[in-house]
Image 1 (cartoon, rainbow, N blue to C red):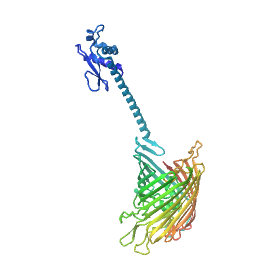
Image 2: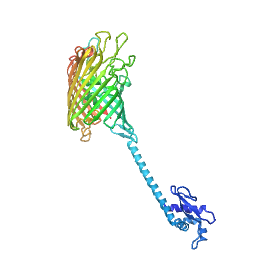
Image 3: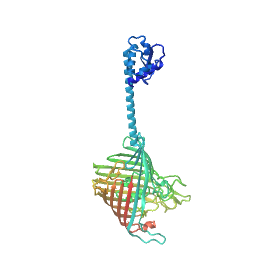
Image 4: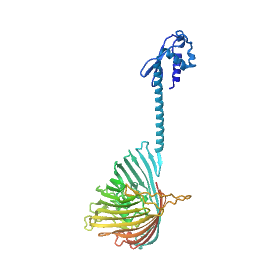
Length: 559
């Protein structure tokens, strides 16, 4: 507060508070509130003794008597004059300096508080909501985040050549059908809690055969240590195979290859359990202990019971379980666009089969089926049928009790060129089986005509989003990214007591990325050979020696 305000207040007090009697009045100022008091107290500084001017004029020569009303004409000079008569000048100056210092301190604090408030307002406005590419929310302190994401894949299939055997009298035609569908329609949310925890929940509206819970894919909570180690609990993918670890948003071809679909995707790769992951730029490993997937009674919802009801319902309650592990790395790495990837996977799965009281098969078991690269008509051209069947007391019955999977993978990226291949094998064990082996492998090459390179996802040891050097623009020079690919795919499910058939094919792909979140894909597939002789399923057997050519397309948007 300025001295003029103080003197004006003193003058007002003198003019209104003193009686007509001539006597001195001691005044005090509060150093915090800067208010004037007539009595001493805590935090109050004595600033002087004062008298009314008309009374002071009768005692002091050379002074001009003035009324209280005239004090407003020149309060600073009169207060200073009166103070010198009754107050020590050094004491008054000290009080004034103290008051001025307190006022400056208050002004500084006020300015600091205003600056801090403005910064908090800016920070709140900055982190309240963001977009890029998903809709992102974040608390002001950064402890909580949430990001909405989703994908839509619209596919079509046109069967150019469709030569198959004529149907049996009571069967429908064995041929594949052309058409279009929504392959995936997913919406999810993921984010962090208290910075160390993260979560993800995703629902696919195209899954589940009408069951709501069967549409759940990822639904987990994860804790991330200070090191690259993390632990998660809930529903998540098995850590198995390079192509399976890669999100379907970033695949080179529209459908995964036959062995990956047969041993992972078709039985449902999303299962409930606990998983541990460790990832650094040069190598990654993941292990999990999982049981059946989230969902109810359908082949789309449970891998351990694709042929019957969930084993927990009206049964023994003995659910199946599995242990899965994968390790991958880049032994040679010159840069993020020049490296060699290798990896290996292994899994052991117990299978539950239930029987009625008289020993007849009730539900459970396991089957493996495959379709040759198609995505709209997903007819199981190769099919083992249920590997558990018959009365358990019958010597001719069979019961799958467990199966073991193995996988080896490799990939090379050298600028715009890349190559990838995998080998997967499954051994079946149980009553009536002696380690029958089902296997498949694939390999393909790809090349970016516009110069981009495949992007590596370190945490998953898989592929990530392609970002074009220039996004497509109608009025500009940008054409997006263009990729061509060619591959070979082989699957054999004939061994010992198991007759599921075998097939091989070649395929070609052309992919256009007008934007990193938009993709247009087209595939041409020619089946070289199908051998389903001896397969128990009549529809699959009808494709023996079939001549198939397919043209597939996909339009994909994800955020």
